[in-house]
Image (tube, rainbow, N blue to C red; front, side):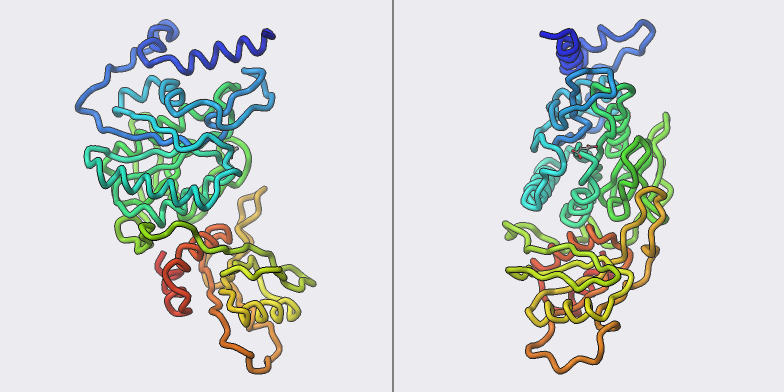
Length: 379
Ligand code: SIN
């Protein structure tokens, strides 16, 4: 075994230690974690993988790592301070990089959370650990499909567990403290990163560094301080127990593609048309408008969404609210369609990747244009 690998194994073992042993090895002067206090709220941590569970070949360096390596139990055991704030249970859902999370896994995860919150009233809430690359998509799916007002928080890390100054332990502690707080009830699914409490509807990963998650102008609900979570705002859009999206009869989600509109574009073509398309746009060239109309003639539901923003500055191009343009406004007056056109819906202040998720769920209910637009107005 190389020296580096041996060090890695040692760190892993330390992370896997039960809280009591970890506490016994804590640095001199460090506070001793409380024994499981039976009056503390119960929180379930469901782990899916990601950098928060990432381990390097060369721990303590800036070197690469394998996301989704530590188990749920190891993640929890690695933060003995959790025991002061909650009785934490750990469950493994998957252990993958978030680029491997699929829509079928969203359905499975939402069903699992719905089931535990229904069957275990003693649970205060659920924390989901997740890779940051696709965290905002999973969080928004849960925001729509977890039909409970009990708190659910999604959390990740931008540095691996064995890295220098890992952010995962603090993020996990903040997330557990947040869902253990009665203040978090009814706020919809939350993302807790870098001591910020963000609504899953608005959260975006703006950059690949600690501090890279924000809620834009509309999504920061509060902060987690040394004294605990402090909420200042609550979302008003439909969510949680008021959600109409029941996954009971849903085994798979309809295929919805995400495409871009751009100067000189000619629109997408598909060998097999999907059920829906979300197009990211600031307006349509006439050539594109004709292509999107042809798709609607084939029965493909169209949703237009503004670009989700500039990754470097965090400044949305036009995503501050209002309705994105629809292709019809750019098309020359067309001949009567050969068949009724499928609906064209404006996403209203939702990033394209989230508009796609809402459309996937909405299409499990309806293909009616008015109903689809209502759903996009309400959620
Ligand atoms: C991932 O998304 O699984 C890897 C990247 C990360 O968690 O930051």
